[in-house]
Length: 133
View 1 (cartoon, one colour):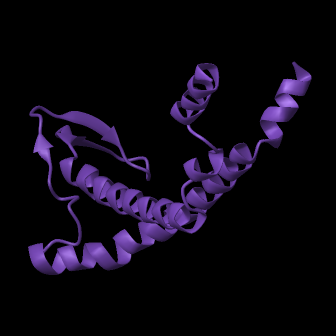
View 2 (view 1 turned 180 degrees about the horizontal axis):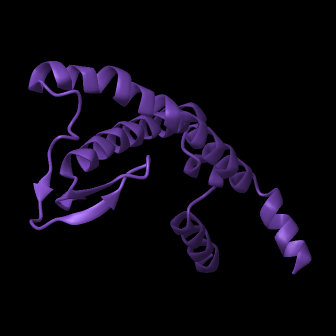
């Protein structure tokens, strides 16, 4: 079992996945900066709001909320649709950038299926022809 674990760890795909995860974690703030500092100001110019956070759905009633400074206020519970939309915009941009990176990686490394040798059908055909002789 230990040897299997060593083989698993030494497999290149695990190392590549770890590097990809580290790069993705490091790249996420870059994309968030893009959303916050470039895309959302464009949204502000078009829609007149700095972001989508002002889009809310009120649920009615009120509840007591304690603020950071210790004061208590009554507020209506709301569903923060706008904040969610802003998060989705950031996710879509990040997903697109990761897609483009994977596409570029696959293009530079070429298809792996060509290096695998003859296909199963080719091998079966050779066996059939050998038996026919």
